[in-house]
Length: 371
Image: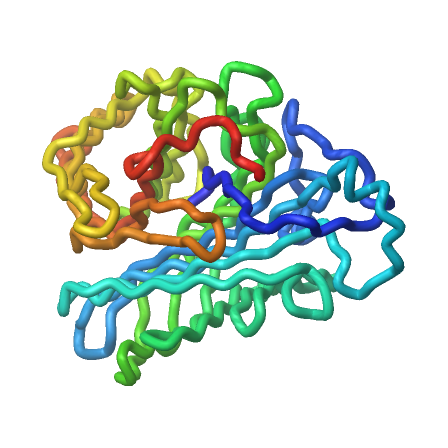
């Protein structure tokens, strides 16, 4: 997903002054690759986000998520007055990671989290002329010229996947400048690989499967906190069987309405992108599911209307319980899961798979995102 703002629970990580002041996103980002696959440490938060739907050789369906977050912490006045000696542990950058697997045929969901300082090779982002490697402990993504290689290993699951882009990266909004609020600086730099052919191995509870399918990658960075009155967001990515890819997000206000900064992008089969303003689509929740863990009630089925395409879609969860609890990292509860897509584009039937992220249902995000 491309919209996650993290509530950091780490304190006292004081870094070197040569990182400079925090920067804001205030206009077109004009991203260049492969350079901008790497980290942007002058901004507060950054995330590399992978989701995908795959099947085993005998047709069993799975969803997966792997996300890496980078958060820059600012030193406090009190800490600055302390005469701290140089230390290999000192850093302003914290890296966190979330991973999950949805075993859709067995209707079970597993998730895990990691966190580490950007120190002593525990976590970080390293760039060479041809590759970007982001890792937290033994979880990693390597973005190379021909493929993205993912690795995550947790007690209940693991996966090693190779993702090969079918389409070039797309810059969302205005040349990568993606508005997230009313002010010019309430924005992020945001791009995606919307269709990555995926192959590899997935292990669930000791059972190893060779899998293949399609994945989606978001990379986004920003400094601005969420605007007052926005309590959460709903983010959608769809890969239709006809080769169309769609990203939509609605910033959700306290009264349930959609903030005008909400938007989206459509890519045709050739990779040509069309920007969607908030008035170009409507997202209507239908059925709900209540989490027995958090008590949050999430929409499980949506009607999605995209007016320029005369498109009406029904989006339904492939598994209700795909909730993520992350007390050891972002300390947020959110829903991130595989969905099925079916509907009409004019007189033509369309269908596909996708992923949906829903935040702010367990509790509003509010504006104090960085502790």
